[in-house]
Image (cartoon, rainbow, N blue to C red; front, side, top):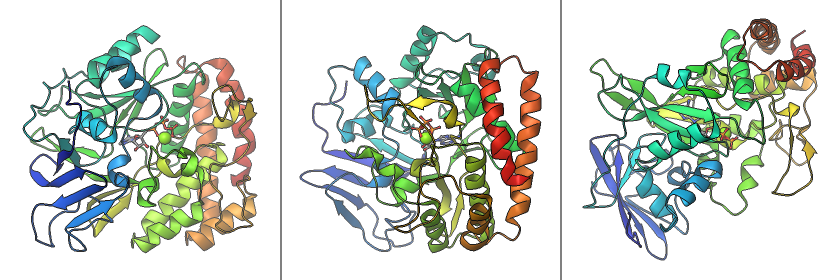
Length: 411
Ligand SMILES: Nc1ncnc2c1ncn2[C@@H]1O[C@H](COP(=O)(O)OP(=O)(O)OP(=O)(O)O)[C@@H](O)[C@H]1O
Ligand SMILES: [Mg+2]
């Protein structure tokens, strides 16, 4: 049980570096412990070289970005009904088990006993039921799971590593979006066939669990794991998961994201990759590619790159509500505007508009070739899925319909 009030947390970078302290009074304050300007940063836009003490009225966005929301947050409330769920409590609960390289500890407080590691084969062979998934989440939640997102998910450590860091993300379909995991699997498979970088992924034997390897944890030869820095674009744009107006992740444009990549001086290779990610989302009709579904990985402020594509789903086959009990809507637009500016819209672009985005915004040499490559991979993935018993046939038929029109961008 955590204390009633948490006014201070130690903040670590990776397993060995105690970087500073996070204090919560009337404001949030982060203090680097060391005065050297050359030390690793807790966040790309909070370097020690610029300032050793940082203050903000709310939790710093790069520390807020992995706070559990959606399904996981509800489960935390249910499992620890008496515990406070302030941001400081959630960070203490996350400990070292958040996406990226930061760790949070209450000074002098014992870290929880590590959770039992599993193998990927165990997870892929799991016969899904809501109860089985509840138990899986309960088993791994109490040792900390720092991951955002609305859909049901949990992180699990693997037997193959000497350290009990949760290196696998397990996503389950919710009742609201049947077949979601198989849908995401099919999208990731098409992306992989198109040569777009994705996390290592697999679908469980019964098609109900999507198992992803974390892209921010790299296995090392000695059995340990390197934790890379990770910041999502929402955090980099100063937005928080727990903002009351959490739909802010749907504000902005893909053009602005490209601008951010240029501002951070990422090489052209990453703009090429960003165009692939945007074009793919357009073509498979992923209407949920918001600011938290793009991110940057880094080792230092001069070694930054675009994270692989993640959370990509053909959303247009589902109806959704904007708030509990609200009217059912059809998903007919992008999550963000393609171009920046007052007159730009979230409407799916024409082929010419998408090509212009590639050429002018992302400086891609041959955007048409990228669209062709994606279109061919979509055909191939659908073909494979036809003989894959894990993919529900009804859903596959609906996805095929959507993809058949999406493919025309690359015709
Ligand atoms: N393979 C991965 N490796 C590391 N971090 C990841 C990976 N996949 C997702 N994440 C992180 O976990 C968060 C949640 O994952 P994801 O976006 O897949 O969940 P979701 O619940 O479907 O999200 P949403 O609310 O956008 O629907 C992401 O915002 C990202 O920070
Ligand atoms: Mg997401």
